[in-house]
Image (tube, rainbow, N blue to C red):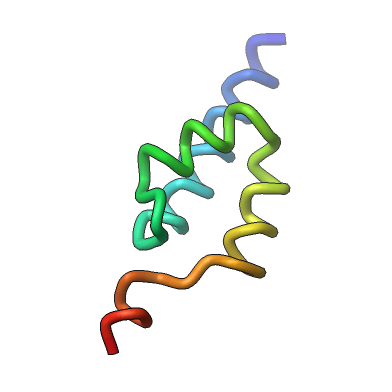
Length: 57
């Protein structure tokens, strides 16, 4: 059971790292990843997330 929690936490941190330049930032994406699954959060980031770097150009 603890292994599943550790895997879930690692997945959430990985998705948060990917979404660190999104509107929510690292911590916001991490919180969202805990409320909905990291996989769904990653899909949402890929589909709808524009990064700060792209918006500033």
